[in-house]
Amino acid sequence: MSDSFDPTPDDRFTFGLWTVGNPGADPFGPRVRPSISPTEIVAGLAKVGAYGVNLHDNDLVPFGASAAERDRIVADFKQACEDHGLAVPMATTNLFSHPVFRDGAFTSSNPKVRAYAIQKVMRSIETGIELGAKINVFWGGREGLETDAAKDTRDAIKWYRECLDFLCAWTKDQGWEQKFALEAKPNEPRSEIFLPTTGHMLHFIETLEHSEMCGVNPETAHENMPGLSMVHAVAQAMEVDKLFHIDLNAQKIGRYDQDLRFGSEDVKGAFFLVRLLEGTGGYAPYTGPLHFDSHAYRTEDIDGVWDFARGSMRTYKILAAKAKVFDADPEVQQLLAATHADPDGVAGLMNSYSGSNAAAISDMAHDPEAMAAVGHRYERLDQIAMEHLLGVR
Ligand code: DIG
Ligand code: MN
Ligand code: MN
Image (cartoon, rainbow, N blue to C red):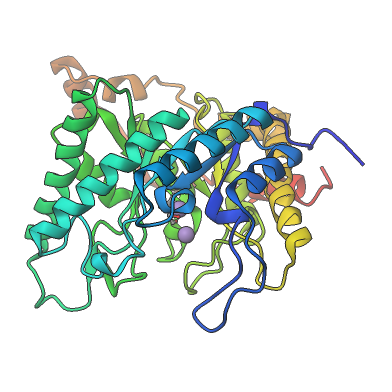
């Protein structure tokens, strides 16, 4: 049965090869599903209505493949994407699986490992360019440590910066337009991960030589793992035009990185995130790819994997429709107008400094008790949001 929540390529939904291709292994048990090839994944994603497919270098080209094998594999994949009308918006490099990166890649204490990591990213960016990717994600999965005896964090941050500055300069030197999207995750798989949240990344980006080509790729699970709000991480990134990509999924608080189907846990958090991305509350919407960095439960067979993919996209579209209705709700508009009211034009005094504005603020008469007595009606506002979500309004 089809309905208005069926995804189309216009929705910009993407999945990584490693998401629907996840065979279900976990630290306590082997794979439960047969592998599906990159070209089969492309056909399957096109069939469920996705816009694009993303990849780590080694999701497509096996580690250590010859140049000739690499060229054949990439050409076949590119052809499959063209045949099925799938875009490749984002590429990324696996700097976390091979044991050479066990002390990190960009932050390894061994400069030869750091140089090898740069080289591996160069090859991965070349593959991304060949496939049409405009965004390159950097997830520093192994950039961390188990003991602070290993290295001074300042050295690690310096090496991280050197590697990214070098790769930004190299990419520009090739004449390529690329957006580097830095992805944070705390405390996994290393005991401590450098730059563990989107907030840390946003500051770090400002210290880079080519900060203009660097932004963030926040992931729901990674912000939620330490109990932080994905909505606020994304809003802060959007506020400075640094939301270059996004990894959508779901997470139960206090667990390992679960990468669950989008919206399947914190529904209210997913609702306010989609509202932010869709811009129904008044700000400009996010226009980049909507990537689901997640995978099906280990309980699932291949049919369940495609249920997972369809559910991810449908939930996003259902929440987008609810966000639109919420922000068009007259009572919501009235409550927000009332709590943001500025009858005396005070806000204008603070958004630009002048001597007269300073005098006006300095001399302004206030009645703190009267101001303190006013409630904000957020209970009513949140109840309305809940009733929209619960389908009774
Ligand atoms: C994990 O959340 C990371 C890796 O899967 C990948 O490097 C990145 C791309 O979305 N997310
Ligand atoms: Mn994750
Ligand atoms: Mn991710």
